[in-house]
Length: 440
Image 1 (tube, helix red, strand yellow):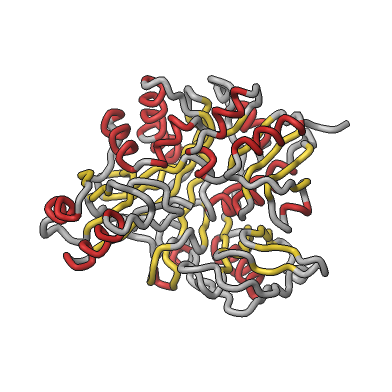
Image 2 (cartoon, rainbow, N blue to C red; image 1 turned 60 degrees about the vertical axis):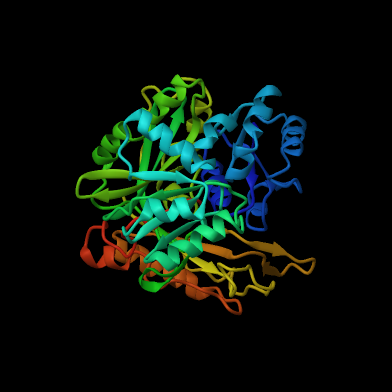
């Protein structure tokens, strides 16, 4: 007997990982994706509707008689796709446009955090280069964030006045991300942690912790990217610690948004800095992160479909607990030659059918040609994820998977989870200091 119809919106590795998890549901859902990718096409029916086409998504969901629509990327959420689906009477996993401002505006996020009493770095919102430089003064390094969606690239850590001026001019004069405001923020010392929580408008239920690697090069060198790898969980953030952080960070934000008339449903992602004074929020995303999702969801034993349906109902997660595979996971990203500046020209990918047993492959930026060959089609191309008895075993298998795949100009970090694995637990690693945007 056929299960519920579920439509997942998006085309990247995050959406592929979500669909993989939904496919494990005992309810045997009928899976659809828009627009999907060649990997997703192996587990779902794909439809050529762009994720940004809000009217097209609503029409498709209606034609499919979807019981649930899951929104992957941030832009459709900011543009009101959930509001439009709700108006059509279609359940959705994701926040309204009003609640999605938590990611769409850094200044709005800071205002909510202040009102909710959630720890975060001190900040100033500026609209001119002069005001930005004055706010920084001689306090370097300084964090400079474009006040808007920037695909994970709207943050600069300025080490001196020249770098600060260049960043401010890029954001405020050249309008690199179309913004007219910038948030100048205190640089936080510590270790980064990503903590997702499922939210039903009333309460927050934390998922397993993760750490991602934003910079392009080993040792955390080079420019920010959308994420070059991740592992889950952090050794020091067990279930009790995650619940404590969620109560201190996610729940007050949910309460504040509800007070403002914008209850949050969906996935609330806190990018945290674990400082000597406790966790502080770098910023929020309002959907599953990428590539952390690829490391977290393979470990989830609970039924993701039931969890998402519950989150779409006010208070639907009350009394729910989660079950996890105790083994850690490591995800390695293969990126194209031009990334992060560009996606590079399409090239043929070899070895997709030669992966070692136990490696989970998700497509992030690929396309299939008429002859059946798969080509690169974007900056981040593939994700290789593996679980192991410990982090060392997981990363060995994940890198074996990455070695089996090849395409000209492929880029890969070789140090994902390396320091954590060698330490024997999992909290340590290159990402330290407030590198800023955790958007994916």
